[in-house]
Image (cartoon, rainbow over all chains, first blue to last red; front, side, top):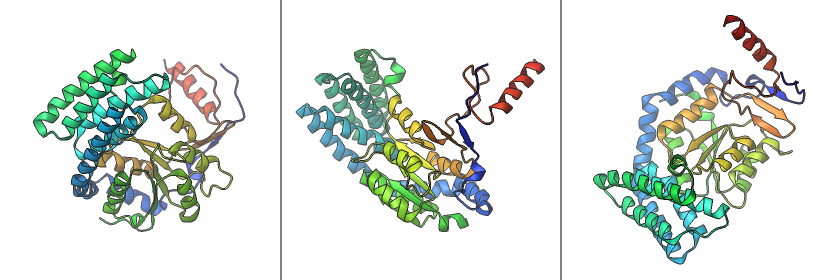
Length: 165
Length: 177
């Protein structure tokens, strides 16, 4: 057995202030886990969906511009916003492809290498199509996302699971 | 939907993307929360934390000039931090492992991956109330206990106050076998 170290202090959760008063905690948690809370919050997302989809399309325009200019940092920033918002408003494929592009650009940046133009262009084109797609095309978009993740995995020499997180 | 806690709970939302910030505010309002404060970066959020004293924080990771990791570190270890124990839920689109590890090591309580879903957000908030995490203070870390599960095959050094009980539990398992 390894020797014990005595420099670690372990602080029990009961010894610091709770988030909500103890008398309210149970009802609070029950409400949060209940169907009513899900419905209310779901409606809140729905009310903003149109606005958020427009925002995603704006980011796509910015991404296309950054790709044309060969600005990898700007392309990463736009793709990062698309992966963050896309899935929340139903643009799942666009979000996944944007995530793959982020992974690719992030690894290339850490390796101090310029991104491969055609790899970026393929992603950008697929994101633009997926962001404007209806349901059938979205399903195809999922396949495209997987194919592009395979390309990124091959290019970077990393496992497919890492490129398709 | 009524719960007294929704009336007095204070949330701080730290997110540089205005769309996401507005969405999070809408979600919390839909639950019945009334006291929601917003900031676009970690520096302003720290000022807001001292002034408003929120009960929990939702923060993004990437922000300028102070990101979510540095903000979390200040909350946990800053000399003037008003509440180093405040739960911090980090909402991030970054799936890159090094960044997630850095956020965890800064003292984040819970992670919520983007794209966020309503269910996952509600579960994370329920989690910080229902199962508050013990804290650990050591030479290089102060924050929620980073070990979420017991690994019965763990062969490394025992450093925790409760490891003695764990040793006993292992002995007990050995005896039963």
